[in-house]
Image 1 (tube, rainbow, N blue to C red):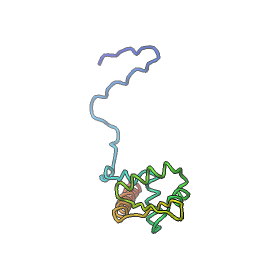
Image 2: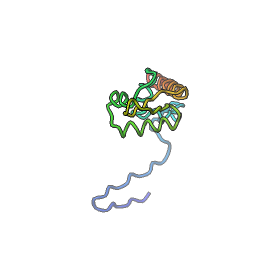
Image 3: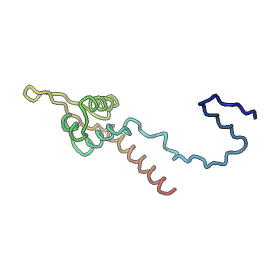
Image 4: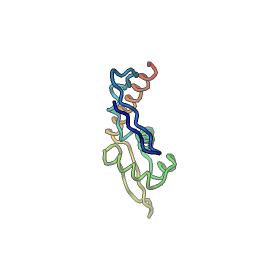
Length: 128
């Protein structure tokens, strides 16, 4: 293999390894690609988890509970709503708008699958 001089200030590339790879293989649980990315995001997991233990919560309740902004909560709630994991009901109390969320059956199943998946990953990690 020919050696090439690197330009000043530029690191030389490492030579390509020839022969068998003696490093340890990366071990991944078989189910790692199946992780529900929709629920895995921190804010969405918080929304789904909060709704799993409450029959319903208002926008204000979720905002306070999750310590987030209106925009952040709105964007993540919309993604969950589009996936039919949560349902949104809008109404008025007097002249004030009220947005209320509840977890749907599909959302509860999604959360259950996600929790089972995470438990399996934790178990596999501890057994290693």
